[in-house]
Length: 137
Image (cartoon, rainbow, N blue to C red):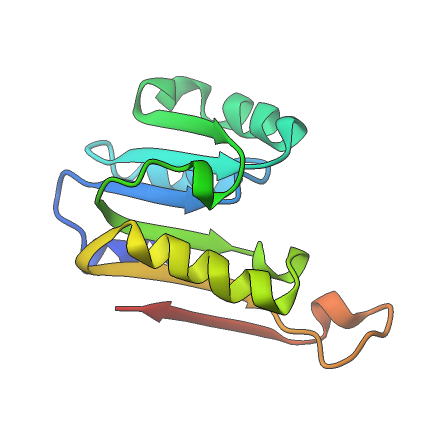
């Protein structure tokens, strides 16, 4: 779904910022149908970057993995960005700062796709209780 939403606004040859490397599965899912896209992926966890690297080995020439947060991502103009299941790891102030930092790296009119778990309370099942999905056009 994220790939489709990005493709609605991104040019055929695009540079996409992916905030949160995770295990790399969604990145692999985006690289296959979009061979003309390049990706810059950031994550502060070396273990997650290793998993992401393994997931996209066959596309490694089109994926740059950056250790750190969005602040370590290049400041160049991206044609789109994703931030999938990352924000719930950050406190509320850091969430807004992160989203603004992503937005500053996008070309005018570029799309940002965000998926975020929004817990209704602090109970043990809070992460899966409610989810919000949206995008910024």
